[in-house]
Length: 215
Image (cartoon, rainbow, N blue to C red; front, side, top):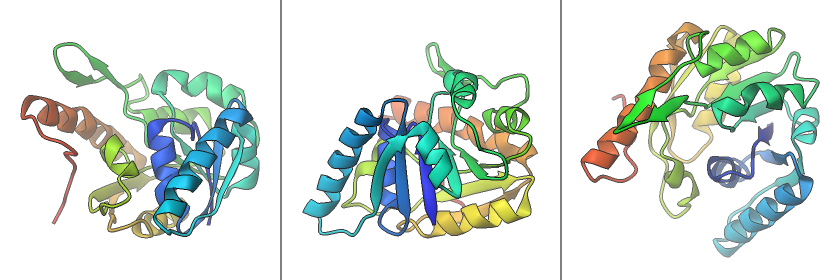
């Protein structure tokens, strides 16, 4: 599968690239191609050291859209609209939203847009695309710990059954992740809201890599 990551030079974007590129072609996208090149070199080195296979390609955000079947939005929610305005050709593509809008006061609090969730906002902004919410609750640092398995549950929701099936297959191809069909995109606010909860649990209980398991 060809996967493009918009915002692929961030911590989560690079972590996803490290994991996905072992079984898929991954296009690391950035506003600046030189940043994507640097991220690609770092990821490639880490995978080579461990003797792991990979297929990584640096590009711009537009290149990630042009070359991929599945496009991941790995960006802060506040950058969503300007990022969409900067690219074209998203119509008909499977779009993964792993964004979790939140604010920090004395604790982390879910802060959804008027549409109800970041995923629903993305679907409204891209009515001709097939938005799927997935990967929302995986601890950021865990993506890059290649010596450790990813064994969390990933809730997947969308209003497009075919796109949902593609993403479920993608999830299940990564380490020991287990995808679960969580229903339509209207469920996405509940999935996104889990992330500030687990961050608060980790912070106040002095835990690391707190995640979600449904068994």
